[in-house]
Amino acid sequence: MNAGQNQFFDFIMERTQETQKEAMQALLEEGFAKQANGTFTPEYLAGYTPKMLDMLKPEYVAEVREITEKFGQARTN
Image (cartoon, rainbow, N blue to C red; front, side, top):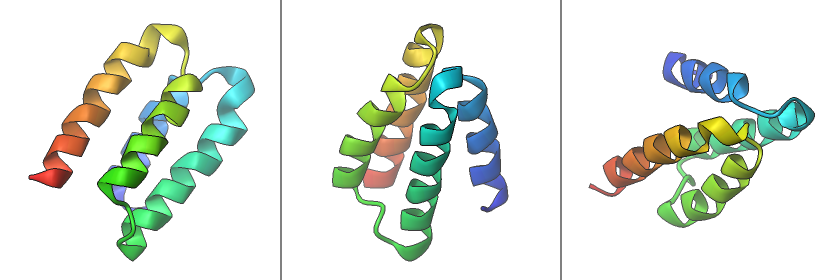
């Protein structure tokens, strides 16, 4: 993981439901691997984001949704 990924990992894990921590870690690691090998596409992000949002504590969903939307826009520009 690079520094930015590590920061994002910590940010998301702090906002993840306790019962979903293991699944979230696996999802994040998969996403980071796809970023590293160049296969993190807008299509992948479209499926990845709902999975991630479902594992968050409800009070953080809107905050993380906004961040991921900005990330998705930045990746397509």
